[in-house]
Length: 130
Image 1: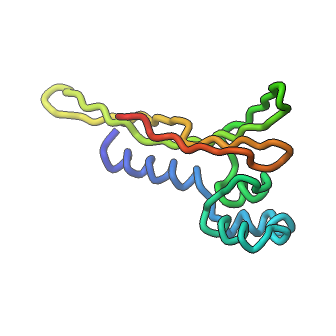
Image 2: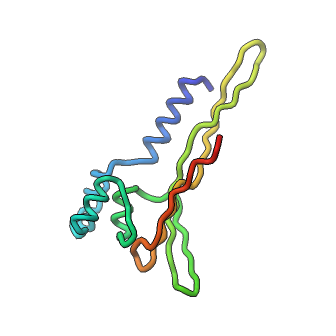
């Protein structure tokens, strides 16, 4: 795959992974209207905080890549996992020319834990070293 195609795919992955906050606000207008002014301001900036309802997190960060259910003695919780990604470049020789190949790589970049429908904790995780 040539470098230009690799960059195009990276942009495509980025565009598909994120949609705009205003679009999600419109999609969940009733839930957005019920947020406090402080939470609306955070959501508008793409930020989340402990105590936010799931709809606010959805509007701020978009849909999760995975949803996990968990139960401990403390009770049940739901975990939303968000993924990040990059294209990993591999260079190799073919006949007398240097070629590049790109493979998509993903990782869990954030997790949000909900208890009783609100954020009880959240974490961002670093991108693995390439």
